[in-house]
Image 1 (cartoon, rainbow, N blue to C red):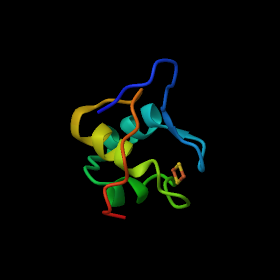
Image 2: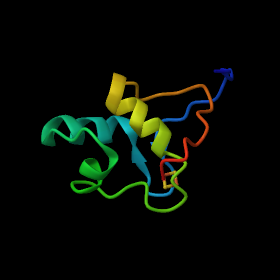
Image 3: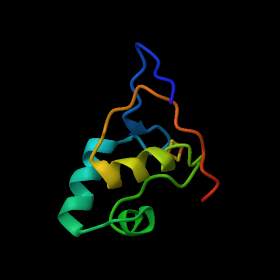
Image 4: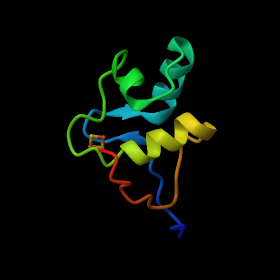
Length: 75
Ligand code: FES
């Protein structure tokens, strides 16, 4: 995966929610999927470009990204 110096993807732009905040919500509510997380916090309902990042965050805890993660077709 190609990394880009100087970029930092760290939020759902459309809903203005930082991935770090989503991570705290996921941990607090035991959410392990986007759908479970959306049940406790509104995000990711517009362009959905944040979904691959949120999936990775839920998998490994990363909240800041310097690479472009392509859409995975699951949305
Ligand atoms: S960036 Fe999350 S819905 Fe657009």
